[in-house]
Length: 493
Image 1 (tube, rainbow, N blue to C red):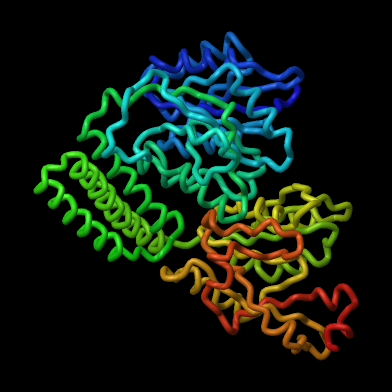
Image 2 (tube, rainbow, N blue to C red):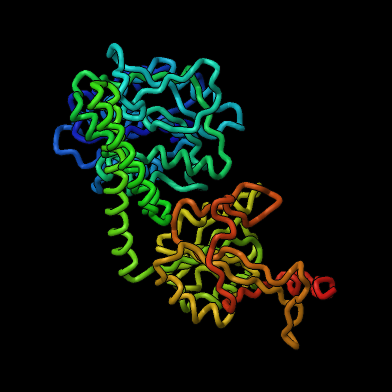
C-alpha cells in the first residue's frame, strides 16, 4: 500500500452528533490529481457513539483511520495523530469545523513552495452571528479573517493549520499541559510562539477556508467571562510550566489592580461596554494567577520525583569513537539515544551492545542541528544531556550530574568543553579561542530547547535561551576532535 502525501488529523471528544457532517465535508474536499490522502480521526476517549460513527466511515472509505487516545487532552490526541501519520504534510481541523471544498487543494498548492513550512488558513463562522460586542476580546472566539494582503501571521488557530511533519520532529509536538481537556486551550498559541522563536515563518493562506460552528449566539456574559479566565490560565501555564520561567506574579497583580480601578470608574460613569471590557480583563488576569499557582504546584511535584536523564548523540561512520563516548556516560544516564545518519561501518552493532541505548537510523544530510533536534524528540527523560560522538564526559561531570538534575531552580547548565591535544602526557588546548568553551549541554526536556537551523553554527539555541544556563566550572566535556582528526599540532599553535 502506497504512503499518502497528506494526513488530515481530526481530534474529537463526545461530538458524535456533528462529526458525520464534518467528515462528509472532508471526504468531499477536492484532492489534486495524483495526490493521496488519509484522514486520521483521534477519539479522545469519548463516552458517546464517536467510535461507531468513525468506524462506519472507515468501512465505507479505507482512507479513514480510527485511533483511540485514552489520555485526556486535545494536545495528546493530536500528538498521537502526528505520530501515526504517514504523510509528509499534516492538515489539522476540529470536530466542529466544516472545511471548504478547495481546502485540501489550497494547502497542497501553497506547500509546493519548499520555503513554506507552516501555514494558517482562514476561519469564518458557519452562520452570520451579527455584530460582535465591542467589549469582547478577539481571542475569545475561534475566528480569523485578516486583511487580504496578509502574508504572514504571528498566531496559529489549530482548527485550520497545515504543518510539514518534520517541523514537529525538529521543534517538538503540541504541549500536553495545554489544550481542551487540560487547561482549556493555548496549545496552538504556545506552538506558534515557539516556532517563531526558532525563526520559522508562519504563512497565512486565505484560500484555505473553513467554517467554524457558530458558538457566539449560545454564549452570554458569564460564558465569555469563563472563557477569558480559561485563556488566562493557559497563558499562566505557558509561562510557569511549559517554558519553566520565573513567575513574576507582581506584574499581573499590578495590572489586575489597574483593571479593577478602571472597572469601578466605568461603573460610576455608567459606561456599560467599558465596564464589561474591564470585567473580561479582570477575569483574564485572575486566570493567569490561577494558572501560575497551579503550575508552580506541578513543578514542585515534578522536582520531588526521581529525575530521569536521557543522553542524545548523533553519529555516522565513527563506531570506534562512539564506543568511547558511550562508556563515559553509561553509568549515570537512564537512557541513551543514538541517532545514526546512515553508517556503513559497525556503528549499529556498537550502539546496541550497550543496554541503555535506543538506536535510531535517521539520515539528515542537510543539517546536524536538525538531526540533534530529532534526537531530542525521542528522549523520554526529564533532562537531556547532549554530546558528540568524539567527546567523553570528564570525571567531575560524572560525579556532579545527578546532583545538578535535582536542582529545581535552573532549567539548563553550561559545561566547559576542553579540546584534547595530547594523550601522553594528557594535555588540552589553552588558546583563548578554544578555552574556556562553555556550552549549554544539560537542560530540561522542554520544547524550547531546540537548536537553530543555521548551517554555520552547529549548537545554538534561540537568543532568549543561549548563554543563560548556569555555569558549572569543573564539569568538563573532553573533546577528542583534534586528536582523532590529526590536527593536534595545529590546535596547540
